Amino acid sequence: MFYFSFQNSFKNFPNKAFAVDLFSNQKTTLHFTSSILPSLIITFTANMHGLVIKSTGSWYSVLADDGERYNCRIVGKFRIKGIKTTNPIAVGDRVKFDLEKDSNQGLINELLPRKNYIIRKSINLSKQAQILAANLDMAILVVTLASPRTSLGFIDRFLVTAEAYDVPAVLVFNKLDLFSKEGLEILQEFKNIYENIGYPCYQVSATKGINIPVIQELITDKITLISGHSGVGKSSLINALLPDRDLRTGEVSDWSDKGQHTTTFAEMFELPQGGFIVDTPGIRELGVIDIEKEELGHFFREIFKTSHNCRFNNCKHVNEPGCAVIEAVNNDEIAISRYESYLSIYHGNDTRH
Image (tube, rainbow, N blue to C red; front, side, top):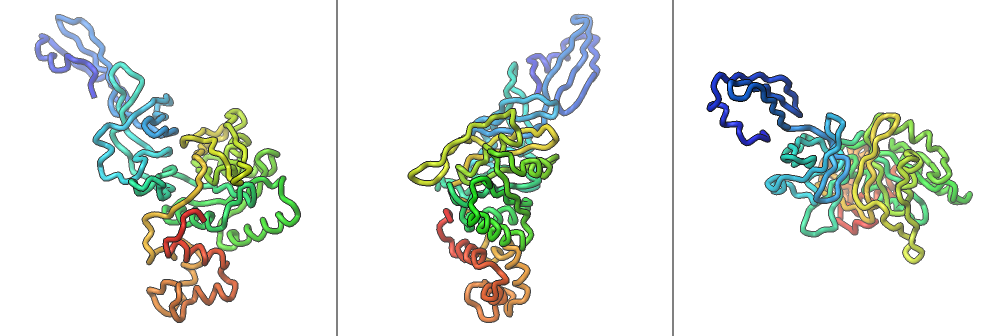
């Protein structure tokens, strides 16, 4: 994109000579000499590359490869290129953009290929899905057993989505300082369910700083999504990991036992030790999308592993004879809660649990 109006008039100048002084994916400088204009230096901004670090719906904050941040919009035609999500661009996306003339604002004109993303069914019925974040090295689901309670069904839906879109997932159980002896026993039961099938589980208190150094080491040099219900302490955890940020935290509603939204838009924060964390608005429901019934079992690790022993290759693990998965559930080799989550998603039940 050239930002000078006389670019086609050089042929009118005698004894003209051009030389490209510098060329990169960001700026190009041309030196022009002629008998009319002894020396003219022209600089224009070409296609730039950057990382989307914040999304407010219509505007995107992009960290360019030159280290500068630019506020960008999407060019109009970009919105209709078969993109069926509520947000065609997500935090974590790599994009190409041009700066507008005489402005520090940009226009995003190309979305670079994603390696993965976390997606959920949108509550907006006119759209199919919402992408929470893209190009992730890890996704952390912050879980609480009370105030508010994170259901096993919600955990399983998150993990299925992470499996389906190739995002390594970790569970972080927060508010450890509030647990009674009985609560700690329940916590261990929850951890056993998921550690036994290969999901790392950690227990922390974001407000008391318990085990925060462990999480800091875990996320170093990674792009990590931090997600969960409103009120589970996502902002408190991020404040513990990035004390200089001081994100606003919210109380849990007395009447509903649900958290109040304190994060309005998805945003990425740079870690001093290397890497980024992505904060997203709290999720009240998580609908699984773009997963066919026939392939759902592939994204429950233990069901997929056990399914090779089923009598029929196309076993649905619902009521078929010779189903090794049902037998494993009856023998307590597969957690009943996990199997119930499988059936719930398979039958398209309520996305809230």
